[in-house]
Length: 510
Image (cartoon, rainbow, N blue to C red; front, side):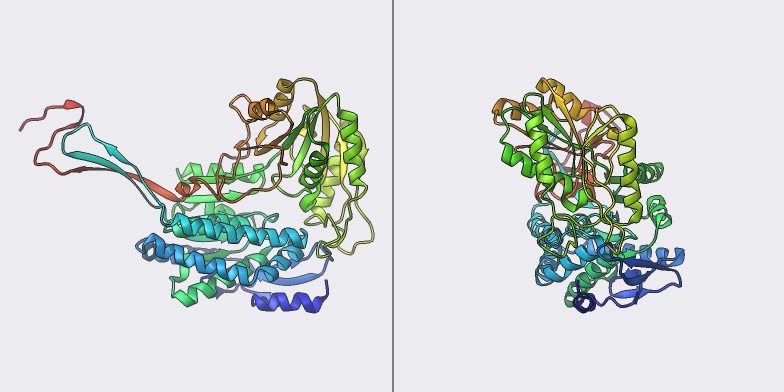
């Protein structure tokens, strides 16, 4: 990408060579410790962002608490209006923000635009939801009484996001939290801090127009130590964390130790079952995009293909052939299918995984590796390996374009293989049989939070609750009744009579 073009994008979000990494609304706080952001696209240093000090962190939390006490009393539809305007600002800056996502993270420009579209979609969803924060009315056993259920704002919501979706995951959480009456403190991945600054810049435009409390949207920047502060802070009743299983277990344990609540969106080891009645063209498209889209760095990326033995060779040949057509290069070039991994550490992890496959006895149908000739050193070619499901390397997610294939005989065997990993995020079946499709999404089918029929594992649509089971964490975001995670439930009993009958028929006469 031409530097002048990138400079224009950065300038549109107020990003300079050095930037404050701590924000309380429109107010910024600097420190003397810096994080550097470089692009995996071309290895070019983009900018520096200051790390949040412990003192600054506490200032941010106090500001968030103060803002939330004001915001909680604003009618929910009015809160929704702020989110509506935010969504319109995102529409105006979709191309610029999508380009920044692509350049700083390394996903294709089309995927960058798609991620911003997810932000716009969740804004639309949240606006409608702001008029539907409903509770139950419940019949009472006592005469002249009724019960009702209310949902109140939880307070200050902590958001810890990952590098692979540097803006959308924050929006999934923040927009729902805002319409619920909460304030948000966001720790973005230190690998993509500029995307967070851009989002804060856009929100600040809304905040200035509507004169909103400054602490509704705040940013802290740093590594693990900031995440620990958030996880252990009793002033943050809910922490939403997206990332690795290892990170999620640490956050969950720290939040749980203080009896707080966590929303955990962790790793996936997603499988696609391909039956003998599957449409081959659809299958190849779904499998290849699922495996190499975002260079295999989606939590919903396709990791395993479980293929019926009668079509095993044909499917493997078709997918291997499709891999030969994958164009790898700058994600800003729309003719390329796959861009870089996030950094050189991710490349090493990928190469180590390839070695582990060979050591375990795997056979490569397509063996990839590091690609030379790219300035950043972050580009790799994808791999397909024939493996056994129980191997250790297969049981753990490799966040890279490494696809495993294995065969099955019966649908029950295929489902057992699909479920036979510690993770439980996304899954899919490709089949022409309605019976097989329905079995897959039944209670005796996939054990994942997402189970699809005749579409791939990768990607999520706003409106449906997103999240998984087992070591994926169990959290849900972005749709259905996931808004309840950002609120506290209160049960009320109201007596409109002139006597005081006790529950369960208890007599207490004075």
